[in-house]
Image 1: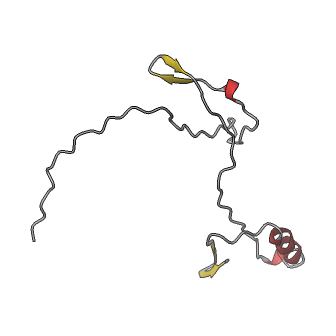
Image 2 (image 1 turned 90 degrees about the horizontal axis):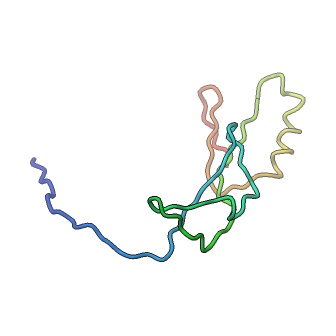
Image 3 (image 1 turned 135 degrees about the vertical axis):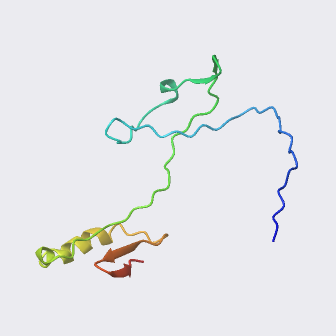
Length: 108
């Protein structure tokens, strides 16, 4: 069986644009999000030329979250309370699998 390599050269596409989106996430040295930043806190450059920021917005970003419960004997009297605390924050849009010993338990 022989594989053929595609040797076709695709020319680059060049277009003028009026707007470029630059999504950013700003964190401190401890990886905590910095909130409340405004347009005046940013500068955008193309090469050495400063560009005008025409639109600025702060938006929530999607997040995936997994909760791990300690199911050891020391949690016998506390596990119901821990589950109740977590139940108020359960969003089930994605699957999350948990492993306990050698048995995998889907948590969805």
